[in-house]
Image 1 (cartoon, rainbow, N blue to C red):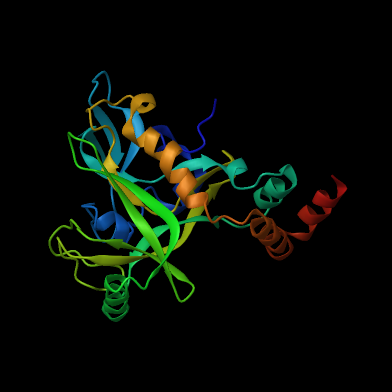
Image 2: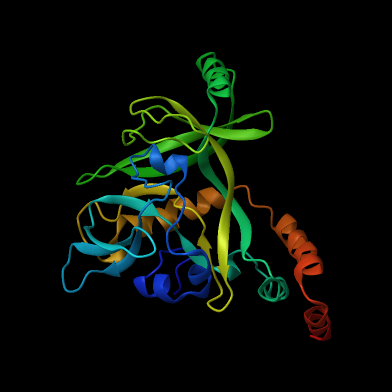
Length: 276
């Protein structure tokens, strides 16, 4: 049975047409950074699910367009999920429209991504301390630390039609900066905005790949490179997919497909679609 959501293999990072176009390296979110994720010029390394040779503890991780590292499974790296396009587009008609369009990037689901500016952060922290921020009832789960699993849940709050999570303890590398230019500091409280996830579409493989490195965690807290038994597999299929889809509006997605088809599909392909 095909996983609802998974990781890329090393072979896919080398051969997928969409990654040949955009490159294998990926931008890291601020949420990834404050969980201790390493960045180099805003790019973050991410796990593949490809074991390293005959060892039982090492896997291959993508650092940039050239370098592939051989890292221990209990180390923390970024997660860049991949899933079948049929997960986003339920009907064959909508899926065919997307495949015949000129669009490479679509939005699906939401996830904490960007640290907000200090003025808004102070306001949210004040309202939070007074108990005046509205909870949405939604949480986002993270698995942190090496060697011993530690599960953390971040409560989502709404404020002026936007959604945020509060990260009370952050772990960042020295001299890093967030997307808005703010200096990143460890053991600080940060508010992170929940935003739509962008996905790169590979039309030949009919899969969607997260454009960014979204979060940071060990592949396996027990240092095993077996993806089927990994903490990442459990996290992706038990937590992540449900959390990002909690606010998905299928009708809105289908309407956007129709608009996209009218705007970005050549006339001859539109005619072909109508004949079907």
